[in-house]
Image (cartoon, rainbow, N blue to C red; front, top):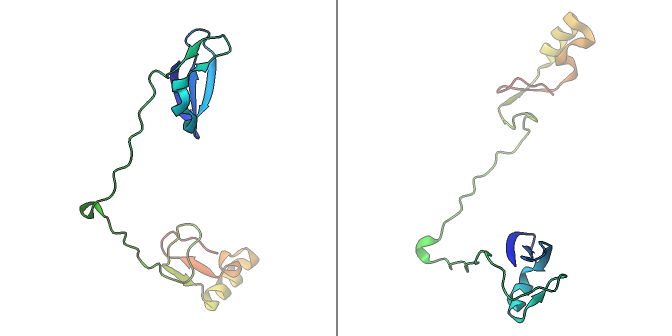
Length: 121
């Protein structure tokens, strides 16, 4: 049998005689030494070209990496750019915008403005 690929714990191999694709679970590959028979009658005891899995190397004290976690600032964030650099739209600004543009003023409908991207919400 010829190795094709593996996906989600399943190994796909192709029969060299009839070119049918057979599936094996990774934990069952160790039992291939007993032989696997294809639908065409071909018996194989190995999968040619299958990659060898290497056991992970245990971490030594020199290889330990510390993870640094930074505190996230609390409070409201801009929904567009996630910035905390925001300001509340003042009542005076809402009144001026309402007087000039009526209900079409973006300041009348919104509460905050992002100082980074200018988004209002």
